[in-house]
Length: 90
Length: 190
Image (cartoon, rainbow over all chains, first blue to last red; front, top):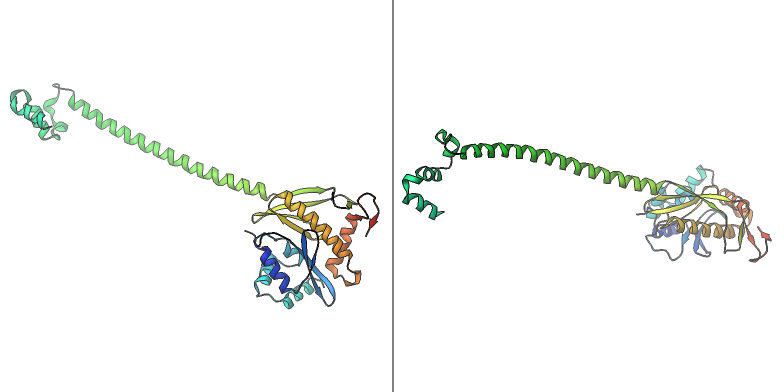
């Protein structure tokens, strides 16, 4: 069973206030901060809601556990921004 | 059984001893008076010996069966472990074409496919991009679609609006692939 399901990936995108853009078979969740695209990830269109998207954590520069916390609420967008700043991704 | 008792009673002189033994079978085990008269006591001793041998053999077999069952369980565990390791061992797949999509490879590259939590994840580490699928092939196809989508998407955004991560991803993608203007010529758009 995947840790990051499609359903959780969508929740992460909403939590990070992502803007969606559709490409051929994927919807790309673009995350902006101060007018700049700082991260993005693809969500496979038409996939089942429990379909695995475990590649997402590395694309938003966090661990699988932190990505899960983002989707499930305890980790806030602001805290995620702080993590990215600490890693030099912003 | 009652008929047999009746016969013994009717002819006591002939069947006195059998009648006595019938009434008290345990006497068979003690009766020294049987010695030389009949082979019954010898047979019973043999039965006891056979029973001992049977018991010994039974426990030996039982131990062997238990050992074999234990080994079978261990083989099954090892087989499952081997299957898991075989599936989870990373596979390196060369990417040499995006056909039929109108993209060309400027420089062949490799992606890594690994098994993770019931799914396959294909990753192009240089560009920090990945995709998953139920099979290795599906994961690679999904990654190709992601690479094309990300390449187009990043090209639509001005350079100064990209953070460090996406800027790096864009430069890596531009190094490895290009879009053909139409399906036939090799004119590159980047």
